[in-house]
Length: 609
Image (cartoon, rainbow, N blue to C red):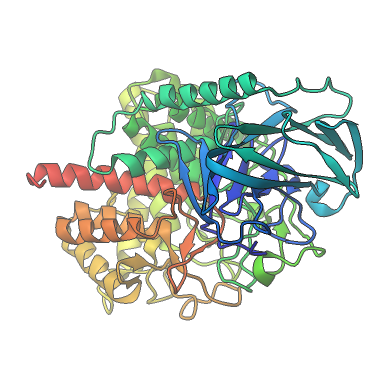
């Protein structure tokens, strides 16, 4: 067993309120519950010795030559890890039954089923939770040989097994060893709940099969809403399922990633907590999901954004860049000094201090979501709050901020921030005129036009023949790949094409795209980072819309080869092609879908196969 498996060597499962990672070693090495942003139960991915894990796998001590393959049951979030050895073939199936209740739940279950397909193979189970990010101790009780209760502060973990598995105490943890013959299966159910709640029902073979079928039918039924019929069906569907897994059903919020603390550079300090909802990500997802046919999810995300707009207007405060999944704005950042971090990547941070940054681009993205489907009059609920937000922006847009990438090197006049302020005024004017809503249209139109003139005059570099990162630099920034997407400039405008050419020279490396050059534009952090997956997919879309279809298709197909074995992407690609950063990242999968849609559209328009 590798102490720290590669980030890419994982699949993700979830129940729409929480998510867990399962490695190709059969380790459940990341799970926070009862919510995505709760303290962890299992986190050996960030500290092998002290993070906690649950392993269910073929016993490598007895079968060291076993090889592993991991896959999803097509069209579902059911993960299968297969072990192939001379003695036989076995499978461990992991899933969580989706919870579509409108209310948050304290009880969450992971079902892990071991089965031998051929031959006879030994298995090992080790359940070693570490409550509260490994800071709290727990007590163990064994009511019988098939069940165990591990109780920590405010939560308890029930471990229940079918007859083939006999649970034994190992200190305050639980282990078991058992052997299965061809055709036999054993199920282990992990249930987290509040102390004192009624114990979960004991698992049985029939119950496990019924849960498996229920999970499968849920995902099959959900995918029926998809309208995508393009060339990259499997990758688009996997990305859509991943986005659904990263959404918190009770509120409709979409988290940025399932994890925290996974590094952008191995051994470096760029280790952030992404288990929250960014206004930016959630807003851009609305258009993507509507384009795919997932209207219910799109409207749920939009309602969440609208609620944040209303809350900020009521409190006479600016919109925050990110929130907890229930809308709580408090994301106090702390360093978990007792953890060593993934392969020594330190510090490990819980919470995110960037929540307090000023990022003016989010007002454009919020407007982008608010006006995503103008035919839906329900989107106009909350207009008064939205109007006040735009009025506030009229006074604030022309000031430096931290920018989209949440740099910690000081505020600048970022071109992308100005661009999205332009979007805010542009969409606000459009919707007010279309539906005759009360608005200061004269001022909004004037501010929109002032921003456009400012970007053209100060954000354009005659020397580079390109739009630049901010007004005091010649450095380029991949966030500006969104300029044609939001309608600021035509995708075939000469100024845009020369900007795209400049990005090719400075930010693109073998079709992979960097956000910016931190050496040329210091961001207040040490170390470097990999190419940014989101930006690569934005680049593909920009190429396609610019008519550079062959180049776009080549870049897209090449980028898909960097997906992991089950079609998932982290945040970045490292110098050796490894995945880096938090995993899986929603923004990347959003951009993949948008790139596929754009490329399909352009290929169809040109009659390509």
